[in-house]
Amino acid sequence: MTPHKASQTPLEFGGPLGVTAMLFLLPATMFHLILAARSGPARLLGPPAYLPGLEELWSPRALLLLFIWIGLQVALYLLPARKVAEGLELKDKSRLRYPINGFQALVLTALLMGLGVTAGLPLGSLPEMLLPLAFVTTLTSFICSLLLYVKALAAPVSALAPGGNSGNFIYDFFLGRELNPRLGSFDLKYFCELRPGLIGWVFINLALLMQEAELRGSPSLAMWLVNGFQLLYVADALWYEESVLTTMDIIHDGFGFMLAFGDLAWLPFTYSLQAQFLLYHPQPLGLPMALLICLLKDQSPGFAIGYYIFRGANTQKNTFRKNPSDPSVAGLETIPTATGRQLLVSGWWGMVRHPNYLGDLIMALAWSLPCGVSHLLPYFYVLYFTVLLVHREARDEQQCLRKYGRAWQRYCERVPYRIIPYLY
Ligand SMILES: NC(=O)C1=CN([C@@H]2O[C@H](COP(=O)(O)OP(=O)(O)OC[C@H]3O[C@@H](n4cnc5c(N)ncnc54)[C@H](OP(=O)(O)O)[C@@H]3O)[C@@H](O)[C@H]2O)C=CC1
Ligand SMILES: CC(C)CCC[C@@H](C)[C@H]1CC=C2C3=C(CC[C@@]21C)[C@@]1(C)CC[C@H](O)C(C)(C)[C@@H]1CC3
Image 1 (cartoon, rainbow, N blue to C red):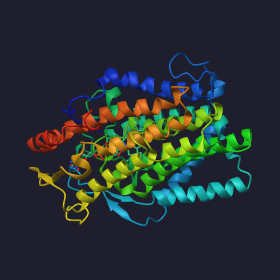
Image 2: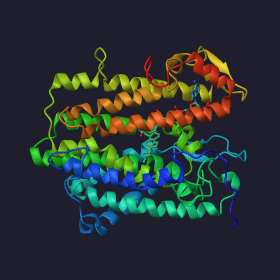
Image 3: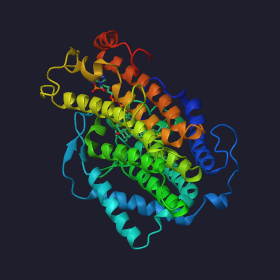
Image 4: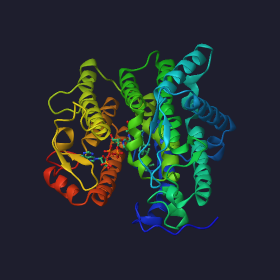
């Protein structure tokens, strides 16, 4: 194995020091949130109510459950797909092929889970295992990231991610050295991005709903709403699975600790925070308020408007990138670039430079509102997501400037706001 020459790409996330801090802070935050949600005061800021001992965290049963879950998702991924899509062209001019069967995996998991519950599978007792499950998932993602790092040492230069190969171990371990690590045709990053964690989120939410029903006789309206919104979000991601192939995670970021931990642990255990909070802190929610949260009214952040913007913007860009003469986008105004590609300057992408982020943020707020306003904790997702998207937008901006140069500057002049019209 010959060490590769370190890349000259500017360091992100505060360099080695920044990522070292994140290596500890991210898991610590996740455990803090899980503990805070089940504690009486449910404080986002401030010390946790108690520190769990190792006997509360380590559980061979949880490890077994995690392996069964990942095994099931691998098996569903390997089933015949309705379509095999090609990814974007890589440095060596090749294109990878990806099975499009995520929605099918969601439906089959739901069917299997339904059969299991009917046969006595205690899904409702999953919330009691959340802490050890989060612990074993964190350990697993650490180990996977190490293995991925070692695997990448033998990868050809053309297979490395533009970031992630600085020569600094911690930095590269965090960002991921290899862009698309695969075992045969099995794509590890694509699998992790959309399967175990994303689908796991739905079933953690469902388990919390079932436990609430056991505790209080029936699930609350707030719990139904959170479950419904987040299920729709996940189902949408899997229905439009192909569009993930053009996201920054797939085309730019390596597969290291950030995405392995993010996809497998952070996503299911922190994105289910609202449902975790509601189980321990029931909130009264009337039908009129629920309707208001679902739908748009005046300036209020209804889920429907968020979803409308998110889906509209993503579909418009994906359709345009696939076929600019598609009738739904052919009439839109564009700016040509030196690469031969064009940039949309009307429609959703003429409103702000990241309309999809705006829709996503509105949805995030809408699925936190059923938790009431007595606590800040359920709004953690909105705060975290705002930081993530503002940072992501800045990273994307840099990449687009490198890619499109003057054409990107012209786009920024034409569409001056990034995410929120007239504000940011
Ligand atoms: N829930 C969560 O935790 C997260 C959700 N998301 C969601 O994932 C989705 C994908 O996000 P992400 O991958 O960050 O980025 P985008 O889907 O917004 O893609 C950005 C790319 O779109 C292209 N583009 C930008 N402007 C234009 C334009 N005017 N016309 C045509 N193409 C343009 C550029 O690529 P090119 O020109 O090369 O095509 C650019 O690099 C978003 O909806 C986001 O909200 C993202 C992160 C986390
Ligand atoms: C600092 C962190 C630990 C960073 C972790 C980030 C990850 C959790 C997210 C990075 C990009 C993501 C995307 C989605 C989920 C969250 C992660 C993995 C996504 C699958 C959600 C559903 C959307 O419709 C999408 C567009 C498919 C998303 C793609 C990006």
